[in-house]
Length: 430
Ligand code: HOZ
Image (cartoon, rainbow, N blue to C red; front, side, top):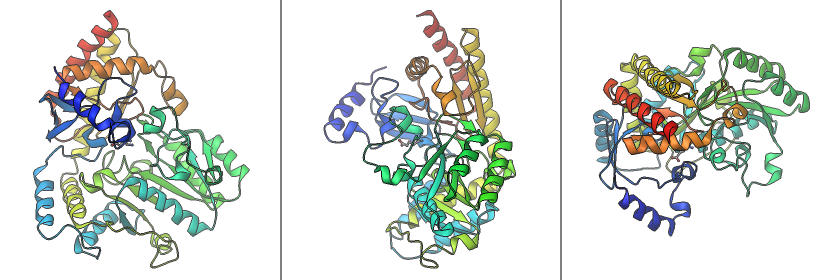
């Protein structure tokens, strides 16, 4: 398989764009090799500019639950484009998408649309601070909530991939208000509350996807809720990644824990740039222009993006069993790979939530970021390179989650498992 065109394109891009990419994790740095430049997507497949075809387990890092070029989403976009790209004024499309979100999430009475997950979370934190009149926030090591200043502290995703989970350029004065706790460890949260009586909110990915896939224990989330209530702090569920992927009605519907604010992204835009944050009316009333907490955006609620998101969520709602079907397929995928690995003496930890899947080359269960860092990164890099050669495109970092779409067929899954068996044999023989 030749990737010459991608190599050349990467060289040129590196001279013009830092690292040749517009988002660090895409650079393939932790797995080696050259990032593939993509020509097009077709359902469950990606085709690179050398003409190689891959089964796509990244799906644009989550948004494409119906795969590439889903007909109904594509048609909705084309239709919206014909009416104009952007107005900077309200459209009916925003209200329609808002209705869907409010209907699906019990905890949300009102929602505001923005253009990215980072923006959604940054705004949600400001809202929590404005609502409580407090400054401190608690976040968990290994959780990633976008790249805004106060959240880029011990973060997962690309930040963890490159070993700089806290970034230069973020003043210490900003991050002194960010208290850190350990995922799935309630004692560490209690300590934060003991250390500060000024905590506005605790923010968590209830299904962490940015240190690999590491779901929170139910009891832990219940205890977190109780601690927040006892201390007058808000609980924010960051579901930018897990929203509409792990389950249709949010982590709250499968954990029984109701957050105060939810942040959304990825699937909610159907592949277009959309983020959102929502909460009960009393909290959202603090947001400008109803209240004093300021937040704004020229392209917020963009009509083309709203149309794509509405088409995606409508299709999901109409086919509500889809997430269960995808969960069985995702489970078959990781179980099959785990068995293939075991036959070669390799231990894999696996998990799925809906159409999200995760695996670690690790002897022990992974419950937090520290556990994740104990995984075999070299083996992951070899596995990634081997699978790419076989025509399977997995996330190029062990600190990311895998995604399947409705276009990922059972046959594709079985073929992936067989390919993984070949790759494991090659790795262990070589
Ligand atoms: N932080 C994103 C996934 N967790 C990566 C996005 C991208 O590089 O496109």
